[in-house]
Every structure is written in structure tokens, then in C-alpha cells.
Image (cartoon, rainbow, N blue to C red):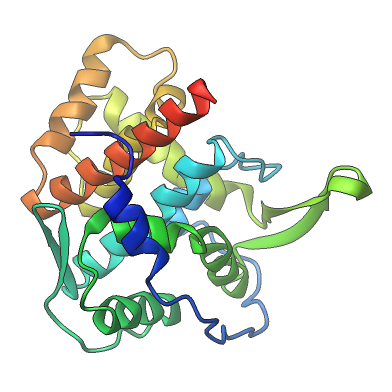
Length: 246
């Protein structure tokens, strides 16, 4: 399989409607507790950023597509969509309570002519970073801060609680290094880490057996999840190849 998005997929992604949708802007819910968020894209966002500074551990394309996949996994775990042979299929149109999950499901259900998983990874990846950050800000998990010189400032989303931010990373790393099995949330995070190449940092210094354990767990996960992760790996692999040859 060609790791890069094919021309047909890129053309289709460009025709998915992208009109702006109002995003609720409620006040933060206060300082987050040490309990995990329960939202896979949020946990992956924490894993992809330094728990003190909020600086990213991944390059932009891998981060964006990984977050897009995280949102799709949330809908899969919620029984709203499934994945089969490179395509997304809606199985339950009932709107989730979470506004971002609702937004993503509505987009997929509305654009029935576009079912290719890679198309949706590309489309959702264009806005996933800001949308997931917005959801986390609303929950009091992060706060936006400007960084860099004034002529090229960027917004970093700094965790409001270091323990909360580090929990997903520490938990998953420990489970993998100890050869443990993983629950559904951690299995999804392991797959996202593996297919965005975050596992290199997550398992820094670990033995080859630990890395084999990670790959084995992901390969033995549910077929729809494996299907999505395979497409994610292809998209990210294509982005890495393009970056290296540009």
C-alpha cells in the first residue's frame, strides 16, 4: 500500500464541506483532578506534549492525524461508527453528549459520499488540534499561553495540573514495560502511539521485547480498530517520507 494519500483521496478530502461550525466557548471548569479525562483524544493530546511546558513531542502532521484518529476512536468506542477495509461506516446516528464527538459524527453522517478512512483522517486532521485543545480548555485541563518572539508567536496549551498531564504517559509506559495487558482506552493510546511513531519516545531505553509486546497487543486488537490504525500509519508514514525528501 502506498503510504501517502493517493490523488483520489486528496481530491475527495478537498471536497468535504468545511464551512465553519459554531464552537461553544464556555468558561473553564476549574483545575482538573488527577483522574484521567476518559476521552481518548484528550489523553493522546497530553501524551503528545510535555507535561510542564505544553511543547509538542511530535511533528505537526503526525499530531494532527493522531488526534483525528483519536476522535474517530471515541465514536467507535461509543458505538456510533465502525471501520472496515479502509472505510468508515455510521452505525448509530444518535448524537453523543460531548459537543466535539457530536460535531464529528454529524460531519461523517452528512457527507455520506465520502467514506474513505484516510479522507476523514485528512479532513478532521485539519482542525483536530484546535478543537481538542478547545475541549480540554473548557474542561479546565489546559490553558493557552503565547510562546516565542512576537513576530512568530504560537499558542501552547499548558497543562493546569502536571499530574493529570503525565498520568496517561506514565501509566501506558509502565504497563508496556511490565508486559501487562491493556484495557480499551490504553490499547487505543498504544495504537495511536505506535502508528504516529510516538512509541520511540514513549519506550525510550526499553528492551526490544517491550517494543514487540506493544506491537503484539495492537496487532491482536479488535479488527475495526486495527483497520483504522493501519490507515493512520499509512498517512503518517507518507507524511514522514514527504518531510524527509522535501
